[in-house]
Amino acid sequence: VQGIKGSVILCESTMLCLTCPQLILVSCFVTALCEFPAEAESCLSTAGSSLYLRTLQRGKVSHQTEEAEEAQEEAQEEAQEEEETSSREDKALVHRLSLWGSSGELQVPGTLLAYITPRADAYQHQKAQQLAALLGDSFAVVSPRPLLLPHNVVAECHGSCVIPEIALSQLSSPSNGEGGRLLGHSLLRLLEDPQLQYMWVMEDDIEFRNSSDVLALMQTHAADDSDLLVIDFFPKTSRPSWPYFRLLHMPQYFPMKWHDRFSDAGRDPGHWHGALLPLLRVSRRMVEAVWALQQETGSLTYVELLLPSLALQQGLTVRKIQAQFSANIRYRPCWTATEMNKTNDGVFFHPAKFRDGDYIKC
Image 1 (spheres, rainbow, N blue to C red):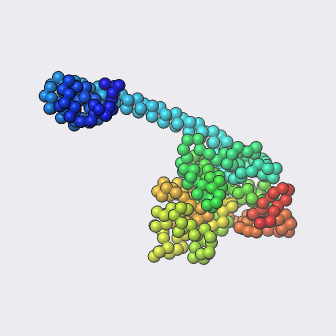
Image 2: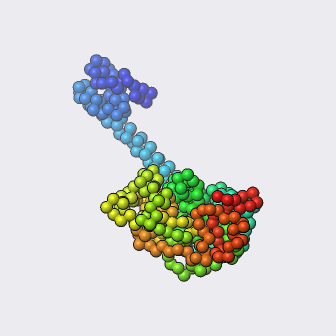
Image 3: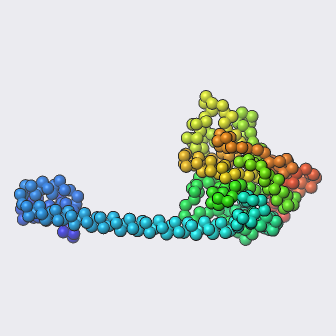
């Protein structure tokens, strides 16, 4: 029977039972195996044989038993696979936490600084060395791939991320998904360690006069319980020409379920805000709000639109970083060495792009 299971000839119809009585048993049994029980029972009814009926029932029970055993084996295999996956993810989490260092040995309690970069040239190596020497376990270099830099953490998930990689990539501008992933993995660190409350994130084109200024930045704002510290932020009403407000009307780059709750139609467009974020600090509450939004809508959007808008809609606190640290941070133009040397105010400069031995213009 197993050899002819699924045969078109034997599973065509009950006409076979009427025309070839000697094949009633085989044809009806195979029909049952082919999952046509109605035909099989009709066939047996026509033949009127209790022997065939008993044979068919035994065949059905045997088939059902085999299916149950197969289902049980599949369930056991799935449970074992889930256990192995969970074990791998737990080990990966422990590994990532060890790379960041112990949250009990931080320069500023409950606070880390992530320096995000895809490069490991001599300039980046010097900056990373200075920060690592000063901040110790409070500091990590977050990169898209392993780099020969101190305290290097690769932005990747071994298993599944709390927020999927594709959503993290949406945090950067549409043309640069890598930057969003680096930022996203830095922020997710707050959800991995319950002892942490804040995360500073610094882009690699921020120049500082001295690495001690970075520690001063963290210590100066340690008593500030704001959920989002930024260089600048502004409502749509005050700067409607800001280019990233256009994402509000582009479903491929913005979660429309979120937009529909705070749409410009019939509502105050002040619900939407932009920000300048080459240097920022976020709280655990801020990251939890981002995670909840992604869970609800299935996507995220550009971080300089996402964070200030979501924070203010959720009743979280947004403030500007103190002026002695933010005075020379702007969008464009790039700072040159000559300009930085002539400037006495401020301790950070952005954008300051160092290439081939000098700061370039942009």
